[in-house]
Figure 1 (spheres, rainbow, N blue to C red):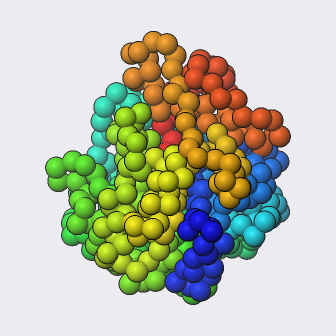
Figure 2: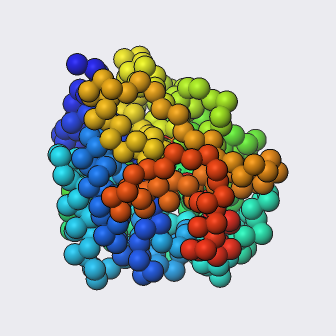
Figure 3: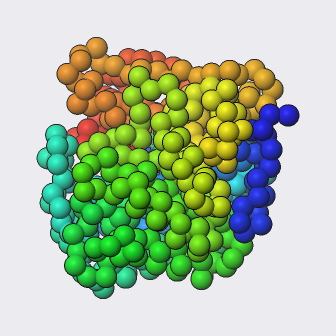
Length: 404
Ligand SMILES: Cc1cc2nc3c(=O)[nH]c(=O)nc-3n(C[C@H](O)[C@H](O)[C@H](O)COP(=O)(O)O)c2cc1C
């Protein structure tokens, strides 16, 4: 049997049925008030039937006043918990784990959604996307404590609803990632400065959740490999954070990279190998926490190599699960070798360049909705339809969001 179908036991003793990890993809399928809809629930049933070991939900916001996009799920109170219970039940079909990704966007919340975004130090957004965002302000220490508590509250509610785990989103330029980065975090209090201080928010969130939910509950982390900027979050910082969370017995660390200004998580058409694999291989030598690496897995050979060469414990994939929701079953039956993602284009080069990630996200959002509505996935490279549909649904905010 392929190594991809070997079980793996996490530090808390929980055994995962195989090595396939469906990474978070913001589905934008919640109701206007952030409650899971039947389409969202059915999407997870389909994915659970598709064979993955762990499904991570798209980012769920811990505060309804700070969301990343229209259609985000929000979990901040027990009202509508029955809808969350239905979502968790759907994701557990077929012995699948369903972990809820918890997030706060910090400064990466567009103008149309947040008048006053918050961040560690109020560093301005840069680049062509900056005009879509209001200037953030620095958080006070007491507000930081309150945000830590919001993550803990959401995790407690997720467990109550039946989710089998949570994943703290500390990647992709969102608030926890902003705290980790010395470029974004210029604080002089105990939350800024050394890497020990910059990771304090993350550690407090993790410890808060662990204390409330116990040793056996699955807690994971999504972490950026580095900032790829002089003076930014470095490879050494990345290893230090992983070592600390390893010491605190986190169950799984997923590796990614990038943010809205520089969306490295999406890779490029030129890349033919999983793009953060060298960081995974580095961590495998430094920590005993099981590792997931996400981004760029397209062939069974590359997946098997990554496991047999001990570069990672799990194979993280996002877009392939949309293009082919049954991908894991196909791999199991040997009826799959590699996957090609559609190269979305408007036919206008300049537009493709500026709107690249938006076009892609609109397309993937549209296809997730189709799967949830029991329709087949449409493999198309023409980006106009998803773009226009997204514009009609969300208005101008559709082109300012770069959700990852
Ligand atoms: C439509 C879409 C939404 C995404 N939303 C999230 C998200 O909510 N949280 C997150 O951590 N990553 C998100 N991502 C990033 C993916 O988890 C993943 O890191 C990235 O797509 C690279 O993996 P892939 O090459 O297998 O697609 C999103 C990606 C897409 C395409």
